[in-house]
Length: 476
Image (cartoon, rainbow, N blue to C red; front, side, top):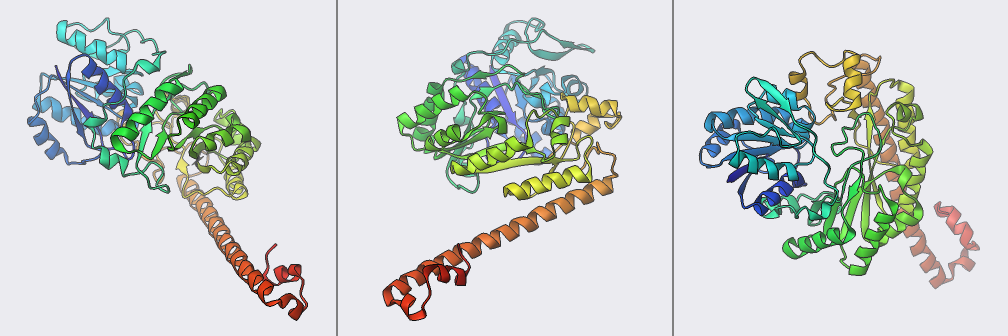
C-alpha cells in the first residue's frame, strides 16, 4: 500500500516530527510505500494543498501533530476527502489523542490513533488491507456508520529499542538541521527521543505516554547519534522528551557511554529541579551537555502547589545554582494566570527570576488543553465555551493570546499585570547586562593598568598599594 504522511504547519522547522518519522519507518518495515507532505517546511494556502493532493496516488493518508494543529487537521481532511473520497484518513499524535471524538465529529478523519502509534499503525494497515473490520485493533477511535467506536487501549511499548530510527530521508533535513534547536549555539542540530512517560501529575500537562516510564538503552541512543553524525554531520542533539532526567542511574550510564565513545557532540535536554544535583550536572557537562530546560512555571510556592508541580521554590533556586556551577546553560518556562493567581504571586515569580538571574522574554498564559486535569477544572468553572470545537480550533502559541482567564482578575487586569511583570524582568536583565559589561571592562582596564604599573614601577611613584589601585578603578 502507498501511505501519504502529512506534517501540519506548527512552529519554526527546527524539530522533525519524530512520531511521523517512526511511523514511516515501521510502515516501510511492513513493505509499504511511504511519502510525505511537510507543510511545516513548505507552508502553503489550502488551494495549493488541494492541487498538490490531486497529483498523489495513495491508499491512506496519515496526519499527526500537536493539539494546536487541530484546526489545520480539520480543514486538510475536508480537502483530502473532496479530492480522494475513498482514501482512509488517519490522525495520530496529540491532535487525535487529546480529543478523538471531537475531531471525528467535526472533520473528515476516519480513524484516530491514541497514544503510541508504531504498533497500532502496523496492525491497522494490515487490517485495512485484508479485512473491512477494524474493531479488534487496539488503541483507536473510529467512525462506524453514524457511531463513534473506541477499542480497547493498547499496551505500552516496553522495549523502545526495537522501534527503528526515524525515516530522516523523507524530511528536508537541511532545513531542520540549519534551524538550530538552541539558536544561541548555531550548529547543525537534530532532535532525538529517549524516554516516554512521566510519573508527575502537573494539572496542565496531558502526559501523552502516561505515568509509566520506559527508556531506550544508552547503547541505542549512542548508535542513533553516530548515525546522525555519519549521515548528516550533526553537531548538536536536542533530547526532546518530556523529562530526560527521570532516572539518575540511567542518565549517568548514558553520560558514561558518550564519554567512552568520545563523540564530541553537544546536547541539551529537559530536566526537573528536584531531580538534579551538582555531581550529576557535572557528569552531564563532561558528557557534552550544554543546555537544560526547566519548567519552573512560577516562583510562588502557593502557585506551584496549586498546579501540583511537586517541587519547592528552594529546589528551583538550587537547580539554577548547580546548573550554572556545572557550566550548563539554562532555559526555563513560566506561566501566568493560573487558578488563584494574584498580583502578589506574580510578583513572587518576578522576584524569583530577578534573584536567580534567569532570562525571560515573556510569560505563557495558563491555558487549559484537552485531556488534562486543568481542562476538566476549567469546564467545571464554566470557563470553557460550550462550543468546544471552536475553542480547540483556536488553540495556539499562548504567548500573547489570553484564551481563558482562570483568575478572579478581569482580562484587562491580567494582561496589564503580565505586561508589567515582563517589563520589570526586561529592565532587571538590562541592568544586569550593563553591570556585567562594566565589570568585564573594569577587569580588562585593571589588568592593563597592572601590567603598566609593574613595568614602570608606578606603585612606588604614586605611593599606591595594589589594593588602592583596585579601589580607584572600582573592582574587587
